[in-house]
Amino acid sequence: MRRREFVRLSAGIVGGLGIPGVLDQPPRARAADQPPGEPAKPLDESYLELGLTGMAQAKGWFNAHWGAAVVAGYYLCKDNNLDRETVAGIQSQLDALLAVRKSQFASPPKERSDKTLIDKVPQALQPAVEGGLRAHGHAVIFASLSVKALRDVPQMAQPALINSLCGLSRQIARKPPAKPGKPVDYADTQEMIDATFDSLARFKELLGYPSIRRPNFTHMTTHTEALMNLEKLGYEKLARLGWAGHSVHIGEPVPSVDPKAKRQDTTVSLAQIMSNAFWEDEDKLAQWNQSWHLSKNRNGDWIAAGHLFKVLYSYHRMVARAKDEQQVRLCSKVLLERYFNPNVMGG
Image (cartoon, rainbow, N blue to C red):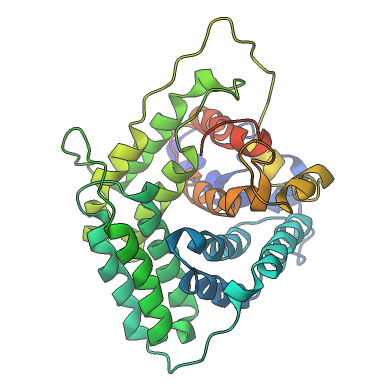
């Protein structure tokens, strides 16, 4: 398939994830097969307001995960041609998350909004990305989602909320960075994206061996998309500043496999996750609705702090810029095995 045709298909069918023959997308989930005039209704923008509120009212930067998950879940549904049942399943889990963490998402006192304050968020991010990788790229991830959401709901650009969002970056900036082994200078953002896919593909030999601890595939993905998004939002220099930390993230070595270990026959496709059957599975719902626990429930808390929402949102956007169909198929399996098999160790 020619590059132009691949891009057209990847951008047009399920946000880049339903390329025929690549991800085994079931026909029912393809945009072209939906009844004309009956697309899934987009989620209300109140989810963006709630997500920003949850990030701003987090007690410590880690708890901002849940607000970021709501923002990512909104865009996952808005930006892709998902069927109505899948959107409903995702929305129900977002609602469950909001209900459990009700106090974190409670409406704060209202202030006069000023959209010129939005730029303070990326300004505060710079110290957190200088010199290397901090906190798996979370400052970049939170800031990127925040700015995107604030531009869509500028009424939320209120002084206290903006200051709290900036505070997430300030907290993370205090952490010492993991520095790259050698200077990094991608030719452009596309080369950074390609490097992430190449990195994920390196771990193909770990498929089917859940006991082998994996590096942080989740944040490799969300970090890459966040830098990609910063550039799109107009912060090219800031995004380039983050390349050093990105190179640390994707440079993790591949663990060895014990030749005596038994491989499990697990097949994971993105199409399975992007269907209402995944979101309505009773066993999964039981796991998600319980607290995360290392040994008892690794898929609790909506799969560890709402990471599934963020990784799916990010991966959709990255696949639309992928060059190699077969590599996309492989990387999907590597990335998503974690979410199908709770015994997989790693991020």
